Length: 179
Image (cartoon, rainbow, N blue to C red; front, side, top):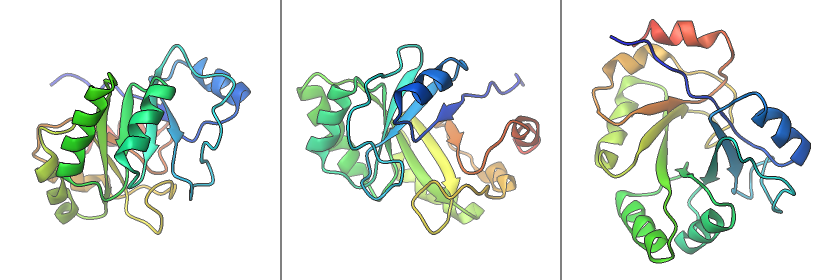
């Protein structure tokens, strides 16, 4: 078994100086939150967007036309869906983005607390490029807490996944012990 290579995604970016500083750390993915109810909502296009890492737009139950427009405006590499988006929504999103020449990979987020929560991923297998497993909490994301990563041993899907929720620098070793 080869060692897990962590992919680091920093989300909630808005300020140009902050974007530059975080990008300089060599992260792989930078997230911009397009959900108006988030305290990290991107209301206006930042004066600087990253050029050395992939751009991720985070959406929660957003209109498909808006997702496609913002994906084009921000030259997104990934669209992260963090709401109740159905498989049909994702099929329509892919079709409409393709019609306007927007090619993005799709990340579908799921709130996880127990092994039973992993079952919700099944209808999305083959439709999205990555899953994101986040902690089930009072908000759709950004709760800053880890779930019990031991539940990941029950994940038997083939879609690769990212983890979210209160992750720090010392967590890579802990994670590898659960997989």
